[in-house]
Length: 454
Image (tube, rainbow, N blue to C red; front, side, top):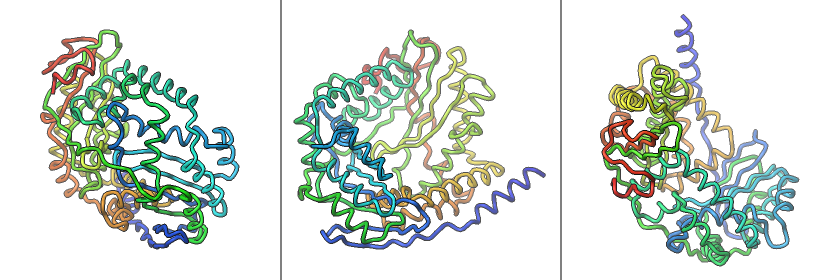
């Protein structure tokens, strides 16, 4: 009876209509076009700036400028405004400011209550146009970065992920970004390198602007003009060469005698993010390994008692290269059992899909998550940005809650069977203190030796 009531509640929740968003197009006095979704019930307005194009101009061996540059801008203050003063002024008006880079775009995020957008935009403008680039802050960030990377690479998960990237990304420049070898990447970066990155990257040209919140179009337009004031017009951004990730169907063991427990990381390709069936893949990953009720957690943690947890996720390395992966720390004396259980559990799920009883509960959670996100201006602005960056209509990005609501079991299971790679074709990375704890195709002692296993 309890299950029947739960299913009924789930169906009722799933029938809640997703909102239809109205997208307005405006142009600021300075000629900057922006897309706006008005949300009168929110307390803040979010303005998202996205500058298309990557950092392919960054010198070889210094690719981590794309990570360090935004950190220097957002945390290092500006000319005449110390980092502490910047933070104090941002907090005083209840606003937020964030800058970050991805392989295909530079992103700026401005958040402020209605009536405070212009003041927040002034602060964003001083960060964009007059960053301090203080050498003392560069040395501090370099030191922290090196310490973090050095600490991470000693962990089983750090070794696993670096091995995975060495294997799948190959010699592409982005491998150096993600594996972040400190001596080659971080310590060699100079202030002039960062200034060159800034001149090429942060411009008024090429910015897509997407807004959601309770401020009116006039206030938003003024804030956009203020934020982009005095920026150079011509962009110097260029993309890296096309990335094509490769997944050798091997089990690779990284032998690390000094660690206490073993680690399993398995990865394989799925269709690119925001391609058709994205929502079906996401709900599939959720059932496979997101919560403590998932298939993998139940099999590895609850039944085998070989780990404290085991998770699955899906992420994109670039717009055209998405990966399904699952990972977790396991007891070494149960490593082979965990490996076999993982394989069998995943293949049962990939071929059999989500069960009749599982599906209503999984969709209820997924649908409620989508509806909750649709109430937040940050989500709305982000959905528009992602649609724009993937050459889709903005309305397609905002239709995510409806697509989540409309999922049904048979089509979802067909996508899982079609798009999730067979276990035999995935890369299996095992980090273990025992060299013979699992049958492996290739054994190495450090992620830096992974090329021999490709």
